[in-house]
Amino acid sequence: LAKTTQPISMDSYEGQEVNITCSHNNIATNDYITWYQQFPSQGPRFIIQGYKTKVTNEVASLFIPADRKSSTLSLPRVSLSDTAVYYCLVVGGGYNKLIFGAGTRLAVHP
Amino acid sequence: EPEVTQTPSHQVTQMGQEVILRCVPISNHLYFYWYRQILGQKVEFLVSFYNNEISEKSEIFDDQFSVERPDGSNFTLKIRSTKLEDSAMYFCASTEGGAGYNEQFFGPGTRLTVL
Image: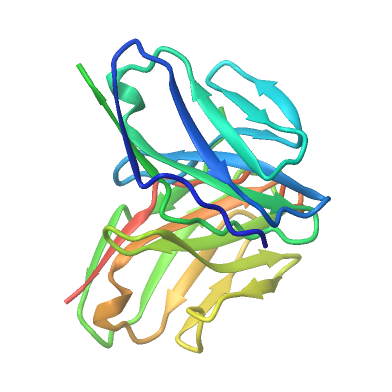
């Protein structure tokens, strides 16, 4: 399982775009990049997943360069309710457990 | 929208006692998991379960832990003799498929406090 590295914490203000970058240098050909969000005292929640280039859904965008050694989660126009921990995970077809790191603790300020 | 449910939301027990944490996965899901999160720490994988048997377990999941799907809807985690260090949030999750890229749906968790 490829190890992931992401910033421990980030601060932002309401209405700003937030970009959280994750590095995963040893990602395997069959692996995907997945992001989960966790609010205090709640279970993690899937946000977005991608293999390469760009993926967008109603919550976020995920940018993955051609070498796939990193990825960037983009949250447009954050609000106070986006204050949470964001986890970058590498997942694959051959294994189904999720290996969480420490995540990035995002604080959105008024 | 279907969701994973867990009971109880909070369990307090004395060291050495047995506890059973209950989960109801999403009805058409076939793969089930337990994770735990000690306060202030990361989410840790405990065990995965498919077709009525354990698929994989972590080092944390020792002989004091067991899982069971006693009927068609519940998925339980039993800790036989609780220790102080078992105090944590326990999350159940389920997926439709067994591949890692299948979205895992997590329940709200059970907070276990061992005194």
